[in-house]
Image (spheres, each protein chain N blue to C red):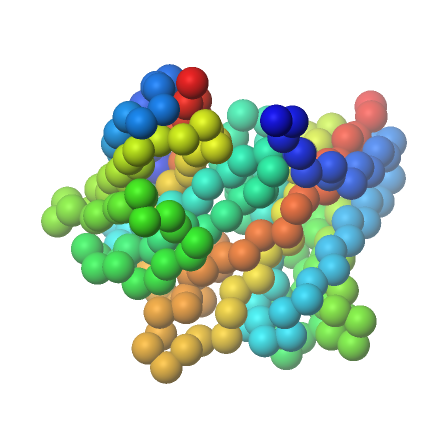
Length: 118
Length: 114
């Protein structure tokens, strides 16, 4: 039978522009929200995380915004460069359980393909 | 280079067979995580080991098993393989300290089941 593949959202920007990648989540009982980047042929790479009790966190050229009211997470990349071209995944970790065994259990979203044109 | 190594890089096998994927974590990391990445399911958490003990399980099939050895390397065993098991399998590691969000991923093993 025919397999159904994920149809990833795409974002195409010019070098030097700012990029905004969005993610909607459904689990209100998450502890952290995280962004990962996956370049072609490589494993995912951690970018930045934000705890559920925060609404904004900044890193180097990146800012993550969390809106718990509408269950929305975004990643802003300033002055986007061709090297930023990749698939970007949002992920979440659950609140710690009594046994502490929920740590590290990342649940990933479907991903967004970012293409940066020189 | 994340410092995590995975072997083999590619694996082609037939339905019904059994394979073992190997992962060596970064030096000093106690936690190892396994993920499956497929076209239809995306990136899915399978299992987490910390210092030789299983800590968390995801939607890992009963045909799949893993272990972490005293030298901290880990193996993922996949048996009675089906066509749908074809995927990229990633191993990740980190020191194992909370909150565990930053995981260092290896380059992956691409499994093709024919």
